[in-house]
Length: 350
Image (cartoon, rainbow, N blue to C red):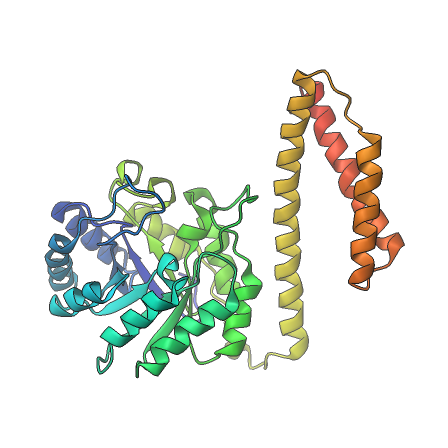
């Protein structure tokens, strides 16, 4: 890794599958020299039944062995009090609360109650939906239980229209969390944001540029045959190369204080990136519409619909204090690009 502030690096398989897989992944990650904490899923809360829901308690001794062999602390996701009790029994060093659990204040409170009087680091992932108050509320529940070694994990947010990421980053929400709770370290989870390994470096670098405190990433000895989330996992060696390639910038080393202008510019950069991602998603849908029109011998321009859309957004923009001319130019530019994308499909260029 290039010089500068070194982030906390957490890595390991999405799911513990077999003892051999856990030990091999752990030892190969250790050899990269690019991991501080080993992670593995033991219980996997899946969206729908029938998917692999974790190896369960029998995987905890495998993590104990990995810890003994590498000397690295180990981290596990917990979703209820019984998970907490088992992790404490088997000497797990760090716990994290997953996104599907954070959405339920009753579940977070149950975990917080189980941890009263226990001195252990706990990380809280953002909820699946983009609800800052729910995320902050979960952290407050853990704080109220007496826990002091806490961190947040930004893993992106579910969005039904997303075409690029598995979970849309919505960086501003993570920044808002950091603003509200500046003493809580923020860890980024590129694996769950991306959903595929091709985007991992871009997201990890973005997190470092935004001064996040660390990364949690998924690594597997044979990613393509993983029992869960295969597409987003890396081999330990590829993970090591990715971390090595990151540029870690540290403003403190330059002797310059971060100014309000710098912060505001970063916020604009994040919003602009979200706009680009949204536009890319929109144009993918436009191409699908073009294909439909081609198959059904329809014209590209639907004049009446276009007039309705333009007026709707001029009215909505006015509510936000935006001028009609500005909104008209933006929407017309988007519409022109959409027509061009559809034309390419119609003539077979896309």
